[in-house]
Image 1: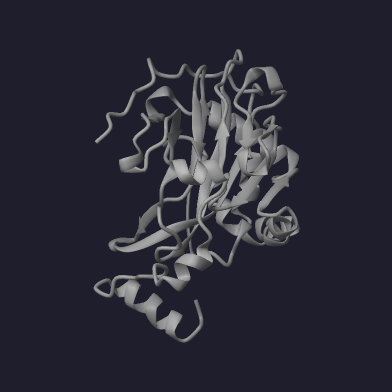
Image 2: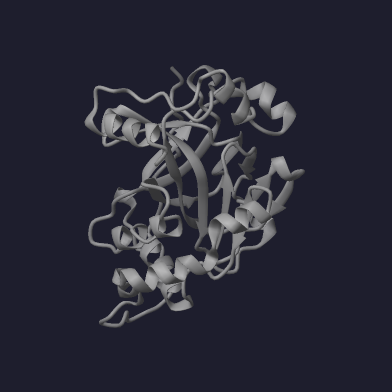
Amino acid sequence: MARARVPAGRPGRSRSTKAGAPTHSPLDWLDDYEAVSAWMARHDLHTALEAGDGLAWVPDFLPGAVAEAALACLEAIPPSAWNATAAAEDAGANNIAHEFWSTKSAPGTALAQLLRAFPLLSPRHDFTTFSAARYDARHHIAPHDDRAYTPVLCDDVQCSRDIAVVYYLTRNWRPEFGGAFVDIAGGGREYCPAFNTAVAFTIPRWHAVTAVVGPRPRFSVFGWFLVPGIAYPLGDGERDAAAGKGPAPERWLEEGEVGRLPQRCKLGRRLLRLESRGLS
């Protein structure tokens, strides 16, 4: 087992972008289910992914005032709430070298309110997982394709990552600051994080995040839409990296490696019944 390399120190608290927050936060908009659903529907994520060969950029991800309040929310997360998310390269454990701060919970902030909006981007997915991220100097992610299995609700149900989403929340970020999204599968093009813009892509897709060298933290929200079962093998990372993509899911379907769901869990049994009836 690889030993995680913990980033040095704890992140310092950033100042809010606005002084004297109003009594009613723009983030209260996120509690309006119909409004948020309608806004997310405008992005038409799945059509955009199909048109972009599995990669989509979503500008104006949230209304402007809401995005500003979301940034202030992440900046207000106290140092003690950030968790070191880091590991060294370990192909046997399906680990790639990475280092940044992340959190799913920050009591006293509106983080939970913000994260609840993301599942509405793809209502067809029943399972999701999203977190906030903070990249300080030297933080990065080595090339990888995001393939991974995630247990949901109970240990007997295994899900696979299906679509990844990263929502950028740092204003006036410049290419020389690093922290760029590198689309290896798309020829190695680098994309500079743009405020209130999200990138989404289907999994597997080879990509990386360059090391941050800028003078301030880079904030984002990241996560995945999940599908029940084993949608792909984890495979040989070096082989797939050389090809610039993961293995074709169709091949593994033919070999019977997809959709194995345990039957001991109630949720697993229900999903198997839906699958057998062609409803999953």
